[in-house]
Each structure stands twice: as structure tokens, then as C-alpha cells.
Length: 493
Image (cartoon, rainbow, N blue to C red; front, side, top):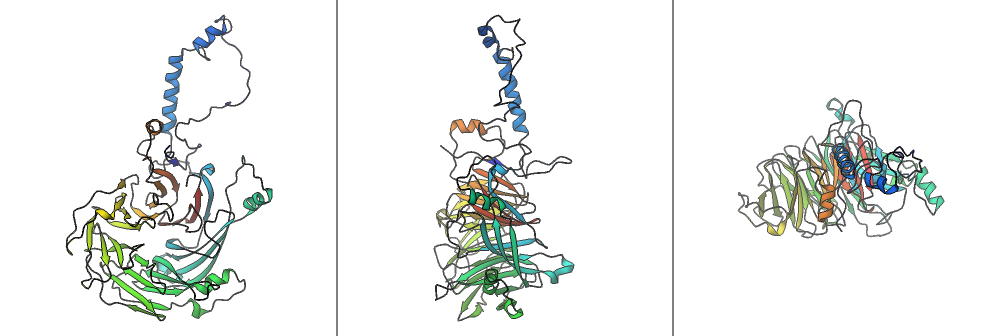
């Protein structure tokens, strides 16, 4: 059997699922009815023939079909439907295993989740998450910007009033836990466009790794910070971070314009970093012996801004870049020409974000300004001349559910069919490309118009900018937006 169709979150009533209809008042209760047809029908057989309400079966069934259509028309889809005056969205708690929102002084455009030492495949509650983010303060208060090293703890499971827990003590811990956001501030003088973390393992395995962050700022600088002491201070109360520890270990100024493209290589533990700017230039920076060195020969080929960069998960010298020129290009860092090996036109609008599957290295997802996101098989991409894009192959899958720009996209870390997508329509959606409906399920979902069966979940999040899966808490998603941070885990993933 295929997976159930999309669960739409944000309805005023409980969301409909495939083949289900809302219960009417009184369903499941013992009630006494006055037999108003007692004089009209003389036998039980006559009553059954006329139907329970005295009407012929055909007339009653026709009304039930009309009622069902009215219910389906009332299904609220965030990003598609508009709220009426005085209406507000509230999440359907039955669709979530965990749901928390945490606010900050200033919104953040970008953040990254930091892998910790608490263990992999964590399924117990309350949950704990370590992360780092950069703020977007008002322009007149640019000096108030900061990097926030964060510890989110006390993230409890949703209350289940109808659920019996065999372990009452554990249940009490889950229900009584209060979410806590602890932060350590690192001052910066500009808005953070994008931030990514990188862990360098220690020779002594008993010691925590050294964690660096790379930050692309609005003033075109790339700041490298060592946030190891900030992370350590969460577990050692009373620790004081001195001013020197909050200064960047390196400030890179090779870019002439600001940028948003940034990624660490997974194959160089000491640190190898790619950064791309609005001029279309991509630079490679490497750390050797504690010294950060940038190759002054940029990779060139994009005719407009570089919006995103991702290293290959399997090839140590290969990376892909996305641009507002509508292309995705694949590069080899060993190339002396500094030109792309493959260039494919994937959109007629800006390609804002890309994500390389960690499970299947031939799968690449793209998200564009027109709201379309697609999945591509890189085995179908052929080498092209340096200055011309190859003929566009057909995507493995493509969806235009979102009607605003795609702002973030990321493959599930352990499932090669599930993707998280954030968009400018204030939604963060989860998709399963493996879903195929059979005939019966197709009939059940036919009334929910314009909702692809691969859409698993719609989460409303104001002005959502970026989302990430937690690599150690299966199914946990974190997002950042105009209203702060959201952390959730659904029942369906």
C-alpha cells in the first residue's frame, strides 16, 4: 500500500485524511429516538426500505455526497487559501509528535544544526539541540547584529490526552518539560546572509571536536569563528567567554560583493570552504596548520549571482553551484581552467537553492524563484562546453505546489526519497518521492485539488527562510523565519 496523501495542517477543524469524513454530533453515543414514522409504517421492513430518516436511499445518499463535497471545499491549505477576517491558524496537535517555537530579539536568515555527543538515532524526550545562527537586525541598528550559539533543551513530546503510557514517570517528564533557549553571543557588524558549521575531530577522542563556523555577511566579508568554548560553556555553568574567544580566527575579504553561497567540504577535516558571491565568482579557502588561505583564482562561468553551493557527498574534488542565471553547474576543483565541467539550464528564473542527496549521490534537488522545486538524476547530465549550457534533461520529479519562491531545500539525511522544502508562502513542506497511489487511494484524494500525493505535510511558519533536518534525531526538522525558530517532528515521517 502507498503512503497516505498529504496531511494539511492549520485547519480550523481536524484535517481530513484519505477516505475519512468528519463525525457528526452524537456519533458513538447512546441516544433514544422517538419513532416519528410509527403511524406511517406498519412494519420494520417498511422502515428499512424507506431509510432511517424516512427518505428513499437515493435521495439520502445524494445529500450525503453534497455534504462531503462541501467539507472538502473547506479544507484550508496554508500558502494557497486566505484567512478570513478574525480568523487565525492553529496547528493540529494530532499531526505532530513534537512542536515548539522559540523567539529571538532579531530574526535570522540562516542557521545550522551542530552535531553533538548525545548520541545518534535519538527518540527519547525531552530533546536537546545545539545550533548556530546569525541575525538580521534593522539597518539603523546594524551594530546590534550577532552570531548566536544556541542550546535548545526541554523539547518535549506533544501531549496525548487519549494515549496511555506504560511508564508514568517518563510521561510526567515529557509533559512537564519546558522548552529553554540558551544563547552565547558573538558580536558582528553586519547581517548574516548564510552560516555553516564544521567540526574538526580531535586526536584525543575523549575531547569534543573543534567547531568552526563560516559566516557570509552583508558587507561581503567571510568570518571564521571557533565556537568550541561557547558550546562547552553550556555544559559548564559559570564559564566566562572572554572577548578574544569571540573574535574571528580569520576574516576573508576576497569577495567584491556580498553573497549567499557557502559550504564546507566533508572530506577535509581541517577545513576546506567554498564561497560564492553576487558577481558570479566562487572562491576556495583551505586551512592548513591553523592558517586560512584563499586561492586568488576564482571559479567563473555563471553570468549572474551564485545563490547556493554544495560539495559532492562522494567525490572529494567535485561541487555544484546554483545561480540566478537559471543554471546549475558542476565543477572539479582540479581544473586549471576554473570553468564548469557540466552546465544545465534548470529554470527560467533564479535557482535559489540546491541539495545533494547524502544517500544517492546521483540525485540533486533544486528550488527556484517561481516556486517550482525539482529532483534531477545527474547521470543524465552530460559534459558541456565551458560557456554553453547542455540541453536540459527532464527532471525525475518536479512540483509547482508552492506559489512563491523556494527559500530552502534539503534531503532527509537517511531516507533517499524524503525532502524538506521551505517557501515564501509561509510554509515548510515535507515530501516523499516514493509515494504512488493505487486506484482506490486516488479516488479518496481526488477531491483535494492541486495537492500532489507525494506531499506528506504542510507546516505553517511565518516568513520561513531556511530549514534543516537534525542528523541525530530522526524526523526532526528545524526552521528559521520572521517569527523566530520552529522545531517539529511529525507523526507521518
